[in-house]
Length: 242
Image (cartoon, rainbow, N blue to C red; front, side, top):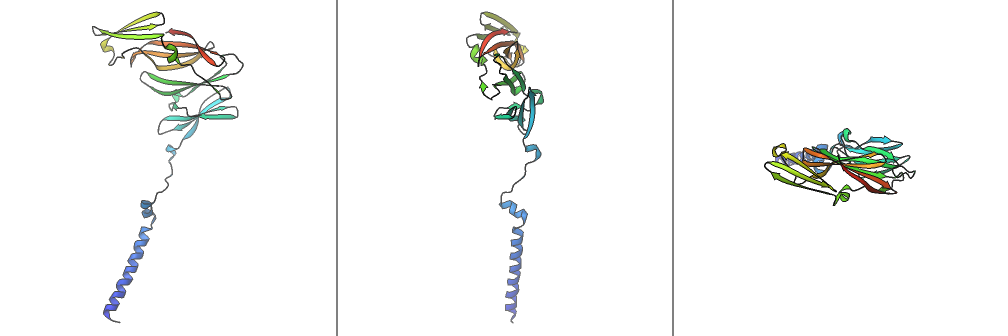
């Protein structure tokens, strides 16, 4: 065999070896991962966890804790051996977990379920939402204070000699409030109602308490609106400033 023939055979053999090695390298798991999507398991911190929020009189409320968003959603109501899930939400802070009251305000021998949820909170703000259910999971429309206050509450403000003068008119009464201009960094252009809203049941009535604020850090009082449940509808019974 000539030297030229031997050289060609040797080079060809080396080419086969190099090609095989290259193919083997490109098919390693590390290289496959660069070209194909891979399933990455969720960590424990990313997985929703269903937690018990509150229970009362055989009724319990659970929710899915969304750890990344620091919020609980959805929320499930359990009544006896049945349950229903709602796209309601509540903050994840245990101090603001839902409140649950079972009562019969209209005295029809069928309890209503009052669930108070906190959707958000901050300086001078508590955003509370109410849901009212029957034991068959049918809902009763909650009262709407904003609608009921229409034409019953007005306010205005004047700035005189570095002072803020607020006038509040509630039904047939007028209230005035005066503040030094430097008592707050920012002033509202009118009395703001309901940045903090809370609910309670007292003396057979649903009480809605709404803050009255002239600045983010200045509250001049609370507006308490008392509602009676007549059959399946709430009727405003009283408004008072406290």
